[in-house]
Image: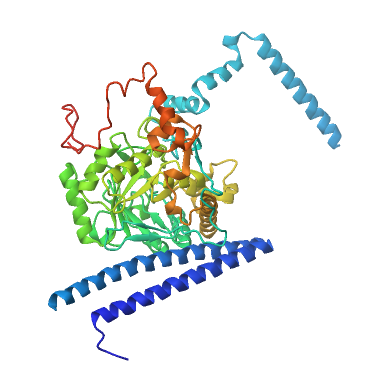
Length: 90
Length: 488
């Protein structure tokens, strides 16, 4: 693995990984919501409780998505700063 | 045998009721027991019993959980469903419920749902077990709970994934070793149920653990001062906010009791560059307060939220400063309407306590009030099942957010934070104008002409005098010579 990542490369890497996490969180949230619906269809008290927890998990994954989005924005602004600095030096 | 006893009972009841009716008909009204009916209707049963309490003890009664009056007319607002004009949200779309508080802070506070547990202090109000149950429930839902005016209780800190600490007028959380451990700092200058009135817990009601958490020497009362210690001028307040922001990376906010001086108070909060503002309306609950403080002081939550939101928009600060609403919000509909009026999130107190007790109230009823299970050093404090209580609150929050999501589908929105005043309609014309919400009786196109008609009526001379709305003036711009400065 390349050791001498430049700052810009590192930021690009973090940005793409954040996008990936965001996508995974979205997919998992959809799955959790599906589980919630299936579990409540059964109509058992204990399973309903598990379904509630699935629903809560789906919302928290939504929160993860939002955190990823705002972190991505911060990374983008850092990338821009780095690019501006590089242009100034050039 | 049963029939025999039943017959005796029937005869007894029949005889008693007959005699009672005879007496009601016979006795003069001034000597008649029935006089209690019109009297209790005149002064109402709550005031009647509180008159008795005052006359028995000679001191203001400490009424629990805030005013019984619903000052904010939440039921005068309705949401507008959509069908074709804008399409409803498809059911397979997940509604986004998360909110970030204090976006300008180095470490903003992101919560999964826009409902948080309000500041209810350990010792001053709730038992340790109740606080832990609330913290556990908040953690399960990915939201925050609040210390209230207390010290930092280790067990609450451990149970709460996100804990908002109140920098308080008692001074119990106001040292760096404590406030650097919380996820947001809320400087508490007042509360809806009591304004900025001082409070005192007598030494005799303070147990050993309370002493430790609050760091109060034995034999001393716990005193909440009317002013924050060390803050007697607005400059000192601004300095305090800056200091807390320098020492921590978390959002630093201000909590006040909602008041008609709201905009003047917020002007100073803006100067101090707080990250969030909590407005606690007059309907706010508390452990116990004098009825006059609960019923006759403050500004209703609905108007406080709307005015604060309009003020932040006017100052173009709504992106930087989060607005938190609290005080008498009871139903998921109330929560969502508060968000639509401009709040980023809401705090719930009384409702959370009721949900916490939930079906455990059978342990206390019918001989003790259900809150005996959750109040500090009450008769049944040790009977609370913490895990069951936490599940009850978590279930309540889950159900509430689900109800809010359901409305969101019908409004054609994909996020609770996208709901705004355009999604509301008001059933009262004054309310419509005050809240900047359209009036339900006439179409959107007729709103202006409908209200203009009233300007021509005698007595509605505002426009004739050429009155114009003055944009929010800063403290320096105001010219009233008799207006006292906010801090003296």
